[in-house]
Image (tube, rainbow, N blue to C red; front, side, top):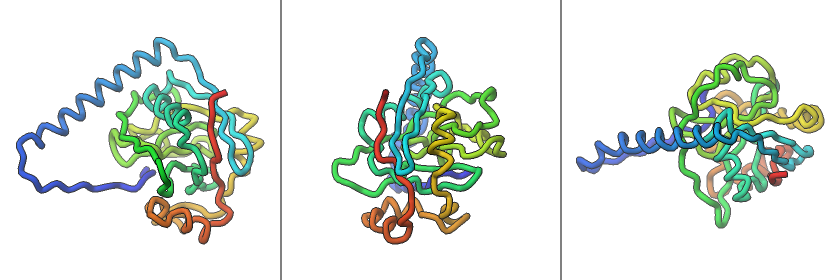
Length: 224
């Protein structure tokens, strides 16, 4: 399942060093994945995070043992203050609620991609309230992620980048997550909801306010 806009980068320079770049990047990502996996399992203590949304608070339990690199990236984003007015742009009833595509703003931090975590067959099928990063191919996780809005959804968890790294507490599922606005439906080309590529454009904030005024947002996230 496709969860984020695919980017194609072309390079027409004839440089022998370029042939080695994919190998070096793959080796580096593999090394980082092994290191993160080892560290997470040495101390896989859950971390509690609260995200304030336009519908109320989401209490989240981050599980480093499930997805070491994914959990580490999410907590990094929390600590960096990334989650400030983050649009929940793709909320589809009984499917997912995706977020992480952001309108440009001053002093925005750039996040590179991270390697895929080891698959977790024991965590499939995804349960309601799981959080996972979205991707557009192997080792493409960056900032986009999704909440699972239903149980036993076919297809979720089949892609190598889809490994849960956290879960919303049952109380927050009922009090907040169940009330997220799903009225705008899926994003293009599957629906007429917000387009993440337009969100990331220079006028992305205005685009959302003018066309999707009832969209929900994450206002902030912090450890608790």
